[in-house]
Structures are given as structure tokens and as C-alpha cells.
Image (tube, rainbow, N blue to C red; front, side, top):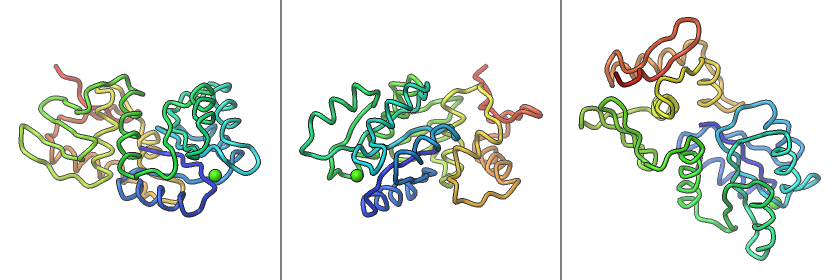
Amino acid sequence: MRVLLVEDDLLIGRGVADALGDDGYAVDWVRDGAAALAHLAATAYDLAILDLGLPGKDGLTVLREARASQQTVPVLVLTARDAPADRVRGLDAGADDYLVKPFDLDELGARIRALLRRRVGRRDPLYRHRGVTLDPGTHEVTCAGQPVHLQQREFFLLLALLERPGAVLSREQIRDKLYGWGDSVESNTIEVYVHALRKKLGADFIRTVRGVGYCATPAS
Ligand code: CA
């Protein structure tokens, strides 16, 4: 899952970027509004975390301009405790949720998972497909009732495929979801993760669509 973090406070930004990175998210961190808009236009993010008090172009302006240019990415706004009017304006400008500073990183994680769920129209927090279950909260995966251990990127690849079983993701889309801009990516790495998942979940769990990419094999 690729997340854009827009935060000019170095301490908060570093804390959030590290915490999300530890959870396996691919995080791009920018510190001002102009950079935020440029990144939103260039990359298909799964989620954006947007501080409202930014130098130059403030967060509300960023949000309005992003929505005006048809950006549908879920946006979680970060606001200061003493500014309830900001929260109202943020939601009215197109934010999907907000968190008041100082916030708890566990709560941030839970809100992110809820937004990611909603963005694909899900209510059930558990993903279930062809005998495999995946819990985004605990990162637990089972196959035929047995726990399966996945590396973080294997886990997020599986999550991406299970969001829409049968929908094909290109290698480029997968790479964008698994890696931030600073990560180096070997050319065959997606294939390596697919191979690992097939080994752990069954050879036919993931279908290769030649010349296009991969999908979770639809339930028959
Ligand atoms: Ca700020």
C-alpha cells in the first residue's frame, strides 16, 4: 500500500513515516503543499495523510485542488487540537477522516485500515478468498485454517490482489503499491513475491495474465 504523507513537522513526519514503514506501507513523505499536489498527480496512492498547517500552500487548499482535479484518493487530515473549525472545513473540503494532534500511532493505523477498506467498498475487515483469510489489522494470514507466515511485501501483494479478486494488476501497479520512491527495486522482484505466495497458498491461487500482470484467481 502506497501512502503519501504531507507533514512539515520533522518530528511528527519522521515518527509517522517510520511507524508506517515498520508496518510495511510504502511511504512517500513531502513537506509542503506544492510537492503534495505534484506527487498526487504523478502517483496512484492508496491513501494520503495531510497536515493542514503547511508552509506555502496550506493543507485545505491542497485538498480542494486535489478534489477539483478529480483525485479520489482517501485523505486523512491531521489537525491541531485547538482548531475544531479546521476539522469541519477539512471534511467539507473532501477529507475522509481526521485525527487531532497529538495522536496515537495505533489509532492512526486503525483509521488507515478503515479508510483502505472503505475505498474498495468493504465492511468486513477480514479478506476471505478461496480458503485464504487475511487480517489487515494483525497481518495474520491463514490457508485452509492453518497460519501462513508471509514477509511484509508478500503480505501487501496478497492484500492488493484480494481487494478485487479477478481484477488484473500490472507489474507496474504492484511495484507502485509495494515501493516508495527511495526504495531500490530489482527487476524480477514482483515475480519472486508471486512465486513465494504460490508456494505458500497453492500454485493456482494467483493467475498470470500473460503480457498484463497478475490476479487472484476468481472463485469458481
Ligand atoms: Ca504543520
